[in-house]
Image 1 (spheres, rainbow, N blue to C red):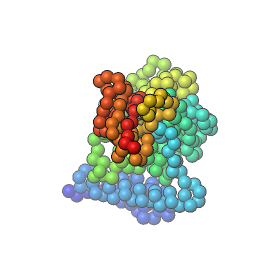
Image 2 (cartoon, rainbow, N blue to C red; image 1 turned 180 degrees about the vertical axis):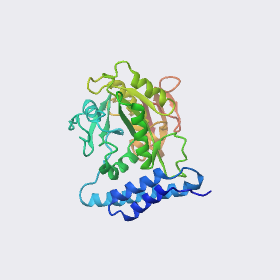
Image 3 (cartoon, rainbow, N blue to C red; image 1 turned 90 degrees about the vertical axis):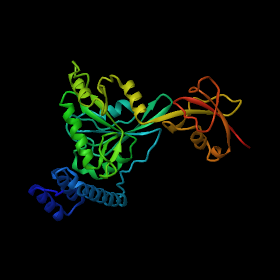
Image 4 (spheres, rainbow, N blue to C red; image 1 turned 60 degrees about the vertical axis):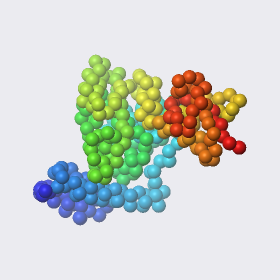
Length: 327
C-alpha cells in the first residue's frame, strides 16, 4: 500500500534534515509523525520515526547526565506517580496538598521548570509523587520521556472549568508523540514501538466546577477507557479518595509477614505486585526462602483464618502470611 505522504510531511522532513539541536530534530520528527497518513502502508515508517525520536532522546539524556542534569528520578517508596498536565491546572498545588514538598506556585503558565518530588503518605506506606512541568513545554520533552516510560502511574491533571476533555486529548496526543499510550488502548503497541502505561484522570478545581458539569463531561467521554476522579487541591476536597485511587492504580499489594510464634507488625509491609504468590512473597523477605519454603499459613484471603496454603497461592492486599521454611 503506498504511503501517500503529503507536501507538508516532506516540508517537516526538510526541517528535520536541517535541524542542528536534539530539540529541533525531535520537534520535526513529531511533526512528520503527526502529518503522516495512518494506515498499514505507513506502519513501518511510523515505527521508524518513533525509534528515531527515542534514540535522539536517549542520546540527549546521556549528554545531560554528563553535565549533571540527569532527570531520571530514582523510585522510592511503594510506587511512583507522575502528575502530567497543561499549564495552570493546579499540579503543583495538588502536589503540595498530597506531600511534604513545597513547590513554586503561581497563576501564570510554566511555573514548574523541572520535576518536584515528594512522598505521599497512605496508611502504612509512602507513594512517590512527581510534579512534572507542563507537557507542552518544549524543553521538557527530552527528560520527561524517560520519567513517563518508567513511572508506575501517569496521572493526567486537568482543569474542570476549561474544556477538560480537550485537555485530556491534548495530553494523550503529546504522550503518543513520545511513544506512550494508555494501557488497554486497543493500539498494537508491540508492532508500532508504543509503550502502554497505566493512567488516571484527575479533574482538579471541583470547588469552581460547582454544578459538576466539567467532571460529568469528562467521565462520560472517557468511560471504559480511563478512570477519573474529581478533586479540589485548593480546598482539599476528595483528596483521601484520590490517595486510595492512586494506590489502587499502581497495582500493588501490601503483605504482612510473621515468624511462627510471633506477633505481626502491621507498620512495615512487604510491597508486591498485584496477584503475587506466596513464593514471591517468600523471595522478597529473603532470597533463600523461596527454595526453602515448606508451607505457609495465611490470614485474610483464605476461606478461613489461618489457612495452610501452597507456594502458588495468590495473595491479596493486607494478607498476613506465616512462612515455614526448612532449616
